[in-house]
Amino acid sequence: RTGRVFRVTLLTDAGPEVALPRLAERRADGKLAQPFQARDDYGVVRGQARVTLDLAAVDRRYGLAIEPEPRPDLTFDLPLPITGSRADFTETLIEDMSEHPWANLPVKLSLSVEDGLGQTGTSGDQALDLPGRRFFDPRAAALIELRRDLLWSRENAPRTAQLLRAILNRPAGLFPAPQMAEALHAQIERLEGASLTPEARDEVAKVLWDLAKLLEDGGLADALAAMQQAQERLSEAIRNGASKDEIAKLMAELKEATDRYLQMLAERATDQEEGPQFGQKQDSQRITGDQIQQMMAEIQRLMEEGKMAEAQELLDQLARLMENMKVTQGEGGEGDGPGGKAMKDLGQTLREQQDLSDDAFRQMQRSPQPEGIDPGLEQPGPGGPQMQPDARPQAGEGAQGDPGESLAGRQHALRRELERQRGLMPRLDGEAARQAERALEGAGEAMDGAEQALKEGDLGAALDRQADAIEALREGLRHLGEALAEEGGQGQTGQGAQGLERRGDATGGHGERELPRDPLGRATGEGSRIGTDSDLLKGDDIYRRARDLLDEIRRRTAERSRPEPERDYLRRLLDRFATP
Image 1 (tube, one colour):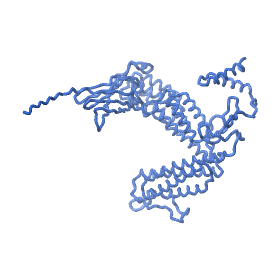
Image 2 (cartoon, helix red, strand yellow):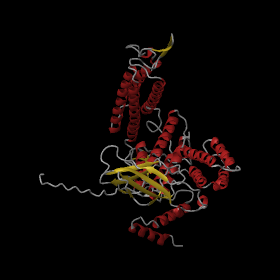
Image 3 (cartoon, helix red, strand yellow):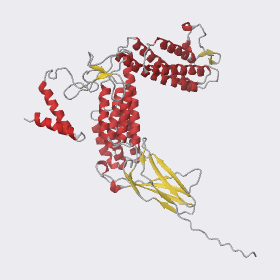
Image 4 (cartoon, helix red, strand yellow):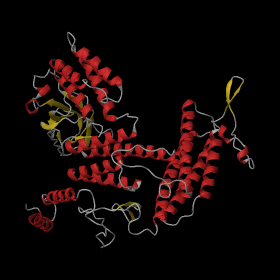
């Protein structure tokens, strides 16, 4: 009636799209992390990822030479945004396929998405190695390879059994626990049985996987063996081109194992026991914990930058250093002066605080306690044990009381002991001494907070404050050791009786260490002074020294990374002195 016309045109619904911005990454735990981008004019309603074995790209050798048993393709639902628009989004598919037989083998990955009209869009096939956990311990890697071959085809069962028998030919010292060898013998009997069902095959594969994880993750009681194992695994990762995530994980494990090893040495030094000796005795060299951490950080940086040769060289240097290390305390490592006694007493306080924290944690695990009740003291009464009020000693009670009967009382006594030790500490100058004082003051405050939390029955808050106290005590011990080393090194110049000199370290640390020597055996001095007044020809075999020197010159001449003027100079030396 109004003369108006409305023309409505239905727009064509475009199909969805999905793309892979980059290839899947292997996370440190072996999981696949595949980012993807999806879009649709109205919104994506579902998506799927499909993984297919790329048999043509598989290296068909050893256990993979025979035809594989048929296995279905792997399919996973793509994660979609829970809130917000699904018209254009970026997400990451994360799946754990470490235990799948195709892990670390060539596969083809394709993604597909679907819209509300049923139209689909695909990313196309993308070739990659299926990310999965990698094993760097040689024993674990061998078991994982045999497991893969067995899952590839049951026809590999006789070959797998034969190789397991070869591994177990001399099992002494190969496995950390004898039960591992017994478990492998049991699997050999199953593999050599009349018939191997798919269920039995999967059970054998599960045992091999669990044993490999035990070997890879450690569990060794000996701290030195655990540290050496972590170093070997990192070396294997360097040779195999590990990812940044794997490097970070292995470096964290190496740092943890190194800390345990240093703690073992420190405990032996505290108990005045002789630490383990490795190799021949050498001139002493001092290095701080900070310098060790700096070396590890440098190794990680070199690996992340792809400088694997330099990283391996520095790792070998760290391994040699740690194997020949013997922890010393206090002034000159004697431990019987005021500084040494302070270090020893603080170390004992740290251990007692750790024990107290462990007891508080076990108490919290047993049962939650009501507020206002001290959880550390249980007295028998009608109907069973009853919680009693705090047994903190009253003013003037001093050492006559018995504060060890309750957690709060023990914490109070430990804080008082720390205050006593701070009052008896030697007076030192320097930044390290001031940092030690601040750290110990913070430890006292954390202990006081833990004591109040224990009195109120708040075990969670007490554990947090006790953790702060433990960390502060460790910092105080470290800084006090540095301050004592600085105090003991003042006024020392030139070479001392032990062939040591007080000077800065290349990594920025301080302390006493053996001076570096050039190929002639001369110690390099401070500043521009390079040389020695000692007789270079002394020794039992000067001809052997000469041969060693010529070999060193030849080695340096062959290194292309050295500056050309230096190599030219070395060549002229060889022309003059190495000509027969």
